[in-house]
Image 1 (spheres, rainbow, N blue to C red):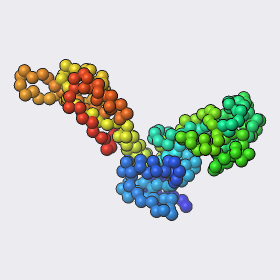
Image 2 (image 1 turned 90 degrees about the horizontal axis):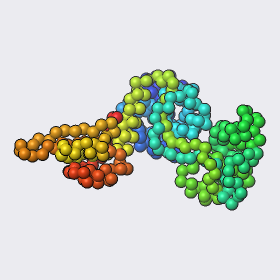
Image 3 (image 1 turned 120 degrees about the horizontal axis):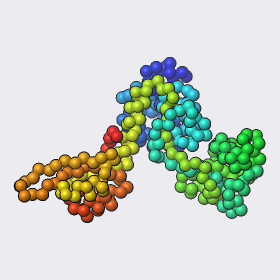
Image 4 (image 1 turned 60 degrees about the vertical axis):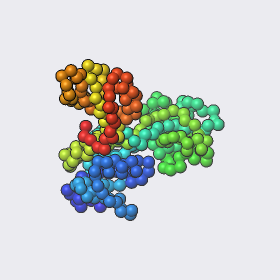
Length: 304
């Protein structure tokens, strides 16, 4: 179906239809206020509040649809972009900071292989044949894949079973916790790539203003997840110490508080975005230097 002809006034946004990125993508779209309802049997959903059509595709196909097709935007893994060799045809807009994985060599834990060099000339199975081939081209010092002595074969699913079933001496696959690999009797050898979900766009999107709007919304959602808002009061005399503790994402907001009497010390109110992971230590440090009334507020959403 020609989606451009059927949906001429909508931005086409390709998102993973299932797998490890799907649920996170749906949460991100909700946080960015891209409202939609998806039928269980359809892979197209129209946004009800924005001129956007969501196209649900396999994550491995999204770089091609964005780079060579009519999709304006897409969410997929960095590993899939590199495997499809699409970096020269797409714009990498934003690391979405979820779906983190390692693309690793895995070998039988009971075996004697302890380095990738020992795999030269062996049988390797992966769904990432391009990245694996490029790795071995560098390792073997050849310029063409036809010159490789290593046998690299494609397997789309259950890659971790390949060694146990005698198909491969090693595999190259995505690893999150590593529990699946351990259960299959495998151990990590080397990491080829650290990957996560990325927002990508066409080099020539049909709706550049809408692309920019969605990008800034995603940036706001990510910032709201990363930061909290820290509000507190402090004597003006220790302002420099306080700002050193809470410099803010770009800068802190400082307001002068009214005095109740001429003899009262000058105080200021300070508001600053602080990384969520360090807020406990920041509150302790503020109290130690003399700040008071330290409050921490959640950020539901923002624009940064």
